[in-house]
Structures are given as structure tokens and as C-alpha cells.
Amino acid sequence: MKAELIVDAPIVESRDIWVKKINKPYFDHPFHFHQVCELVWVDKGFGKFIIGDHIGNFSHGELILHGAGLPHLWQCDKAMYTNPDLFTKATTIYFSSAFIINLTDNPELVTITHELLRKAKRGLRILGNTRDLVINEIKKIEGSKGFQQLSHFLLILDLLSYSNEYEYLSGIRYENPATEFDLNRFTQVYQFAINNFHRDIMLTEIADLCNLTPNAFCRYFKSKTQKTFSRFMNELRIGHACKLLQDENNTIDSICYSCGYNSQVNFFKFFKLIMNKTPGEYRQRITKIQRNL
Image (cartoon, rainbow, N blue to C red; front, side, top):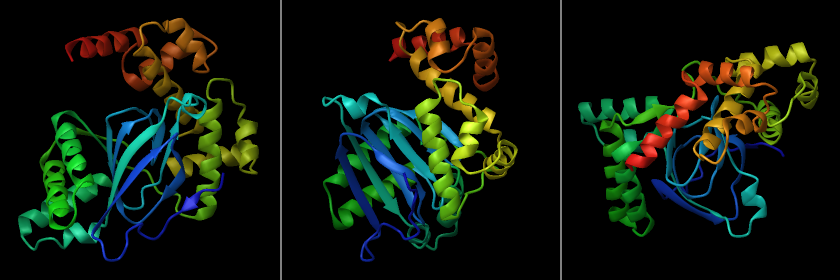
């Protein structure tokens, strides 16, 4: 699939913000970026996303803010491509950095706005009560126009600017592979990895996709992502394992092999390295959280 390099804001010039509703069987967004900020609320659907150098799982209720120029990809789980009863529903709000910076000349508000935009450059997953409040305002935006729509958007900015209920997604050293050539390469690499992480992937396979030798590919990948390809694959596999651990019907043994590990020793090693806890400890924590909801 060819990467989309969207360098123009997907905003009609007469608008300050642009609201896009998505209601279809599955997401089909390739690895791309654009020169506007984006606030994404996933109402229905599940799968994986890549924002910058971060790999994560998404499901209903996900709320993500990412800044201008930050590459991202959303891909639904395979079940959503084959099950006609499943579908995705999401709302995306696009807005330019210049628009919100020019909303006021109040020094304090300008500083707060710049700080929010700085954080958004790495991508933010919005959490907790802030997420619930912002989603509520997004629902209001969907059915409003003009000043009323703008007032709901400003309230969203206020909620995001003063909240500490978020987590960074992309690493602080991540650099955008900004050329269309690089984006094409990374689209191929990421989609191949997502589709094949459940099995052994030979380095020659992935290097051949990029028309590089294995050594050249390793240098190229690390120069663009600040991490090794091996680290990337382990993060992808462990992220999927975290999703499977939320279902108590899945045994840790079966999860290990379904995520592409050939031994529990390696699975436990990389799980502890990435998550700072064992799979069992992670499951206990998730179970406790679910029971307290």
C-alpha cells in the first residue's frame, strides 16, 4: 500500500476547525502525516495504532491527541475485516496550531497553548476523567455549528491544557521520516510487522521489502526511529500480549506462542523489560482495575 503524504491541512480555508465522522467496517489509514493537529475519539472498533515510534492497541473509548507533522497509522484487527457485525465509528477534529495560538494575546494563555502544542508533538493518550469530559464535548461538537461549535472546542482545549491525565506516546527523540520515499518504506515495514508478528520474521524478509541488506536496514531503521528493529518487534508483540491478558480465558502459555515467541523464557524476559512486571502481575493489575469499574 502506498503511503499518503498529506502536506496540506484537511481543512476548508473558511473553517477554523474541521470535524470528520467515520462510520465504516474498518479503518484503512496508511502511515501518513499532515500539517494540522488531530484529536481522535474512537467510539467503536479495535486494533493497533502507530504514532511516531509508539505501537499501541486501541479499542472503544480511545482518545488521542497528536500534533502537526507526527506520522500515524491506524489498523483494525483482522476480525473487523471479516465479521460483518463489527464496524468502526470515530470522530476526528482537525485544527491548525496557528488558529489556537492566535485565539488570544493574553500572555498566560499563549504560554499554556504553546505548552499543549509542545506535548502534542509526541502524541498524547488522554486518560481518566479528562477523557470522559472531552468525549462529552466532542459529542456536542458533532451536533453544533458556528459559535456554539467553537465554544465546545475551546472548552476541550481548556480541559486538555490544564489536565495531567495523559501519557506520552512517541519517544522524545523521535524524528519524522518526512520524505514520501521514507513513508512508503515505513508503511511497508509496519504493515508487514503487524500482519506477521505472530511468527518468526527473518531480518532478510523485512530488509528485502526495503531493497536493503540486513545490516543497512538495521542502520536505517534505527536512524529513523531511535530504536532497533528487534526492540520494535518486541514492543509490538508485548503490546498484543497485554491485550490478550485482559481476557482471563487466554492462558499465559497460549499468549506466549500466539505473539510470536518460541519460548516462555524469552516471553517473560521481554515482557518484564518492556512492562516492568511479569505477565501474571500485569493480569492481576488489569483484573483488579476491571473489578473496580
